[in-house]
Image (cartoon, rainbow, N blue to C red; front, side, top):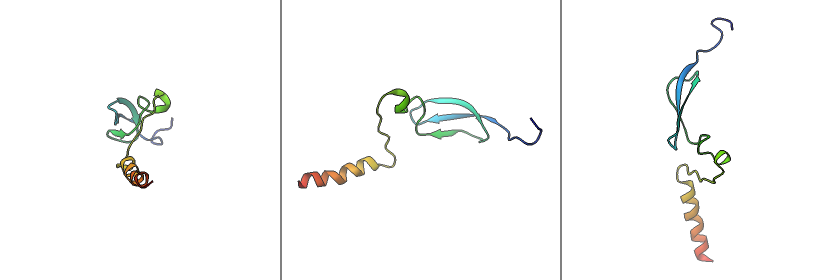
Length: 71
């Protein structure tokens, strides 16, 4: 590799919302926080998991619960 051309890679920790932590290298400095990793992603685990960001699922259920009660 040529000198002074490529970025510096630093060891970092990736922290998932499920609690899984693993180490990798990146040009980013500091820890990286992710919502889904390979330990909790439905494609890899075979389990369906509902990921709720900012209460969207509850808001959807409240909205359509009113419609279901009227019928």
